[in-house]
Length: 191
Image 1: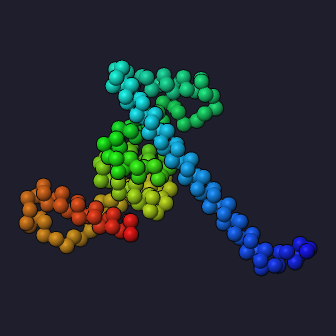
Image 2: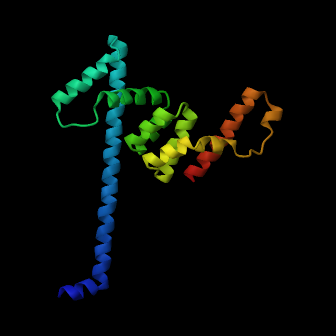
Image 3: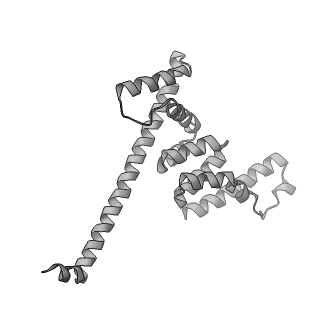
């Protein structure tokens, strides 16, 4: 069969498109696997640093020493600077007491995790932006824009249809309002 007949053949074009789809899906799958492994590694490094600091009384200077020694021992390896090792430590500390979020963070790239840790001061905001990033595939720049434009605050301030403020003490009313808001958020995200 000559090239012209092959390229015009519908069966061939279908086959070609199928192969392209498989290749793209395999690349995405490989990227996700690598990302999960890196996030797991960063979690374990952060955990190890925290544990050694507690057990042996090491301070912050150990992080700089680790960064320098890792660079010497494993040249041409990026991602293990002082700043990034300190982020790994903060990453572990931030999520160690939230097993649910500790699983969710493995679904997004390290850069987005760093943005959320550095720009979100509480668990509710972190969970909101983690789940939104997963659901909508937000890039780092879009995530930063959403945080800076207070997407979480806007969502939480939307008109509520309950009487918590009139029926409950202020502190309890606020917590009940948050629970209702988050129930709606997560029902929307996961259905």
